[in-house]
Amino acid sequence: MSEQKDSAEVIPLTRVKCPVCQKRATVDFKPFCSKRCADVDLGKWLNGTYAITSQDEPDFDEQHSEETD
Ligand SMILES: [Zn+2]
Image (cartoon, rainbow, N blue to C red):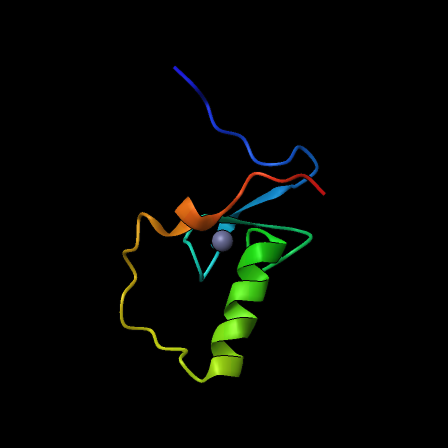
């Protein structure tokens, strides 16, 4: 079994879900789970394509690449 862990420095906010990927938000990027999701959300606004139509995109974070900052 492999347990996937995000970067070690993030503190999960169990009460808040990331609006982008529905993962738990973190203190640093509240209400998002990561800078990537914050950027994604910002990008949606900038592109004018922000829409709350589909909340189930389980494959969403497939686009996340594992790079550590
Ligand atoms: Zn997220």
